[in-house]
Amino acid sequence: MKTTVVGSYPKPKWLLRIVKMYKDGEVDEEFLEEAYRDSVKSVVKDHEIAGVDIIWDGEMRREEMTSYFAERIEGFEIYGEVRVWGNAYYPKPSIVGELRYRDELALKDFLYLKGITDREIKVPITGAYTIVDWSFNEYYKTKEDAVYSLAEVLNREFRELVKVGAKYIQIDEPAIPTHPDEIEIAKNAVEIMVKGVNAYVGIHMCYGNYRAIFPDVLDFKVDQIDFEFANRKFEDLKILKEYDYDKDLGFGCIDVHSRRIESVDEVKNAIRMALEIVDPDRLYVDPDCGMKLLPRDVAFEKLKVMVKAVEELKEELDI
Amino acid sequence: MIVTTVVGSYPRPDWFREYLRKVAGLQKDLDVEIDIDVLRRAISEVIDEQKRAGIDIPTDGQLIWHDFLLTIASRLEGFEMNGLVRYFDNNLYYRIPIVKGKIRRVKRILHDFEVAFEIESKIKAVISFYTLTKLSRNEFYGSYEDMLWDLCDAIREEIRYLESIGVKYIQIDEPSILYAEKRELEFLRDLFKELTDVKSETILMTYFDSAERIFPEVLDFGFDTIGLDFVEGYEENLKIVEEFSFEGINVGIFDGRNTKMEDLNEIRERLERIISIGNFKRIYVSPNTGLEFLPRIKAYEKMRLVSSLKEVFE
Ligand SMILES: [Zn+2]
Image (cartoon, rainbow over all chains, first blue to last red):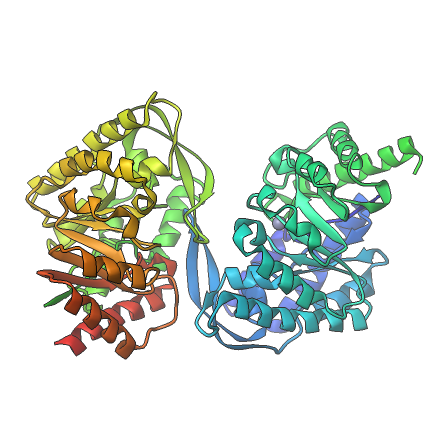
């Protein structure tokens, strides 16, 4: 039973300020780079102090989870932002040509992180299905073609990551449960993405209706599926029970949409419910999703509670 | 004779987004107090942009609409707003309206439209009725029919008011009606007749799917013009045009949800086909959906494409 994170973590306020200064031309790239590296160090320290077993760099460089990758892959063009709800917008990329590998996506971040921590590392990258679903398609005949083509690009990145020592890759696919009718495409895409990737692979899904993707999702070629449970009051655990869930489980048990800090006892109770479904060595305890929208001190406290709950349980269960 | 138009929504100018962020934040939603001069400036910018692109009948761009239901629901008595729900198959979410009490019109609904109407009188008002009830959750009315009638009364008051100030075009957006059951359509006829019984030209706008399931019933709803989505349902809607006769059509033929710019020749051939099969007195051409699904520069390009189509036709 290990603790981990989904990916993002609140950015230090000074980093946000420096990014803005960089955009306004007030500081140069070297200055910004140093700020990014220092922010990763501080985030890693937060995770280490909290005691999280498997960590990532808090995604200090990513402002968003679609366009960040689209900007680094041949064939994408970003014309501007579109609304996702209310007054919230995101830069929605357009696929304008054949999708091809151009720049590394997380390789440098991984190597840097590896150099500053002894903790186990997980590398999260947004999956092919989600990136395509959140993009315009001007080039490919079908969405399916675009997804598979992008899956090849990501597969290359995953293999490069493994070459330099990555052992745990997480494919972020929040869009999959929002289109249960296209689960077959998503499944095929995962197969392409993990082909020849000699690492532990998890897939993270939030949003949407979990019931609609069962039991198909159990056939995905991944070692672990990571779901959000806290946000849904743990009711979805019964779906896993119904379908004899048999993969490792990423167990989102900290609500990232609420600033209320969970008590150690309630997290322990939640984990006990998860242990009715999988054995402790197949359980990965984490927050529901990335924590970037929380205030930093709240995120830090939540991580500490999560780790404490796991430690106490381990002791009680003698594992 | 082809008239170019748009469906309704248009991307907010950046500065207006910033302004809204300041006055309302990201989460606040209900009927925010907006400085009327700021609103006027934003709307006139968007109307100008549509006219510059060659759109004959623009809209106000629905710039203060946080989603397609909220503006209507939050200005009526009886609704409360809840969590986010996906809007059809779009990567766009709306706050689900919950009916908590009797629905009543207690103030003007399209107050932003009125600002636009002062700037430009040749402009289309956009409202919705049935779709609002389908995408809401009813926690008050014992029967769905009662809820529909109350909402119908409220919307009718608004439409009558628009008529009284001289609005020439009133569009009712009803993507949900494409999924109405046959017997429901018969019941809806009486309601829609209440809404379309005005001197203004009334337009039923449908999108996201083909419309074969609502014909022939919809022909008795009293609309002057029916809008069909020829991007999502070209073949099916072509059959409708072949089989049924109606005088006014809005041909939604450019994809309002893709940055790809269509080949004008292909679109022209399609439009020629539609027009030659039907027997129309009024033909409007537009994108199939509102343009807020696109980044602003692409929304403008789409409108340019719509008006180029008109040019090659003339
Ligand atoms: Zn997530």
